[in-house]
Image 1 (cartoon, rainbow, N blue to C red):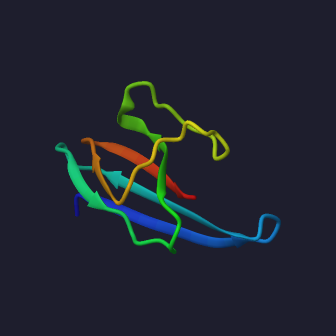
Image 2: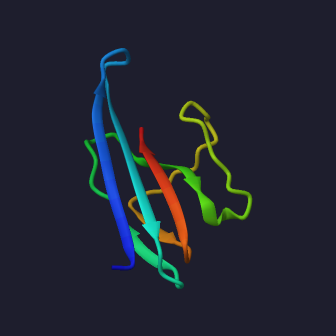
Length: 86
C-alpha cells in the first residue's frame, strides 16, 4: 500500500533485443527499499529517471552515463523512479 511497481516487457524487432522497463512509485512519506525483478543473464537495471534527485534528472536510453541501479534500490519519500534493462 506504500509502493506501486509495474514492469513493461516487449521485444524490439529492429534491435532484436528485449525491451524492459520498470516503474516504481513511492506514495509514502518515508523512503522504501525495493527489490527489482530478476533479468535474463547478462542484463542489469539502469536508472532512467528519479524524481527525488532534486534536479529531476532524466537519462536517455542511449546515454552512456545512465547509472547502474543493480537489483536493490531505495525510493525516496513521495517519488517515482524508472529503470530500464540493458
